[in-house]
Figure 1: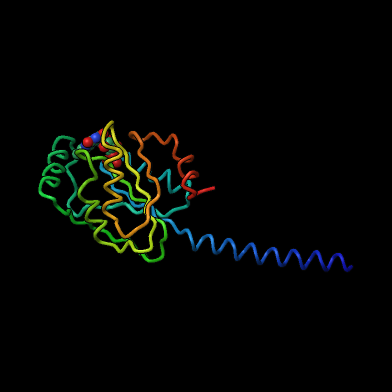
Figure 2: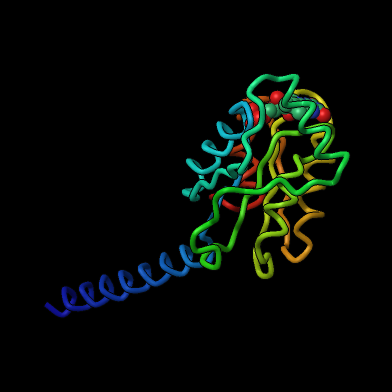
Length: 183
Ligand SMILES: Cc1cc2nc3c(=O)[nH]c(=O)nc-3n(C[C@H](O)[C@H](O)[C@H](O)COP(=O)(O)O)c2cc1C
């Protein structure tokens, strides 16, 4: 009988402890996965990251949609870059203050992050946040784009970023483990 009571007490204690620990982990690690995507690659990668981390997805929606054809889109993107534009964003993150870790992802556009990422970074308070940059690209300027996301969020602390070629998700799980966002 005494052993049973002791066992029961241990189970209750462990249960309460475990619950508290889980709760603390959740609170300490609420994840937002922000991305901008024109042709779907970054969205694909963002969904993969959200799937592995349990993060909430937020797609940056430009107020004025980019042309759907490739060449006109590159021209608009180039003009925005050359004029240091801040393209307006249509939507807003709900409950920004509740997130601790914010992944920010985008395609490489003209050797760097699209200007709309500047708009996003300048619209929120990053104090106390951990930012994790990611990008997708065809072949060049991965590191510069990841560095640009870091540069745009100076008030945050940063974890090592990841660049995926198009929709290739190879290495993402290992990277998330390496930066200790997942176990
Ligand atoms: C305007 C524009 C500029 C681009 N510039 C680059 C570049 O400098 N380097 C590169 O490797 N890929 C470049 N790309 C290719 C995209 O980065 C790549 O296809 C990316 O995965 C697209 O992501 P998305 O499908 O989420 O829009 C460019 C694409 C566009 C539309």
